[in-house]
Amino acid sequence: MTEKPLRLFFALPCPTALATSICDWRDSQDLGGRPVAPANLHLTLAFLGSQPVAKLDGLRQLGSHLRTDAFMLRLDQVQTIGHGFACLIPSQVPPPLSQLVEQLHAGLSAHGFALDSRPFLPHVTLSREVQKRPNTHPPAFKWQVEGFGLFASESTENGVHYQALQDWPLTAPSG
Image (cartoon, rainbow, N blue to C red; front, side, top):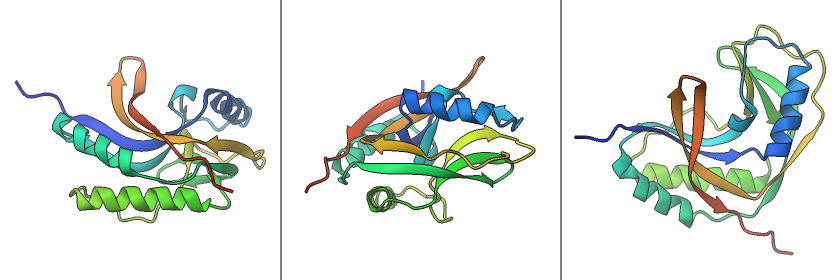
């Protein structure tokens, strides 16, 4: 019997306290649509889609070889992308985030993974299928990013659940 493929992605998991603050602000904006559960807030680094379980070891090995410094991410703008996805985005992308994404994408490409050809847009999805933008600018949500992970997305009766399969720390900045 063959194992069921997994829907996989690499991401920065949003810390619980920050996710709560973000969702409290989002819920005060009356965006409508389908709000993302606080436990599911994350910033996708690379979406891999449906992959055989046999690929997990190689992906874990790739993740363990990525090196960049921990960094502060400031989510301070709202943008609607795609088909009604309200997202928080940074006005400036920290260099370590760009370095992490470049290393990850290069490693995935070298292992034969086809990645999205669009430029990387760091974002945290707040709600799907929104009808309007927030009335105010968001507060500057500050996120001390200290690690990243490999996740599986699973659809359940209660909605989508993201399961962390592996996580890796970022290094402390030198200086």
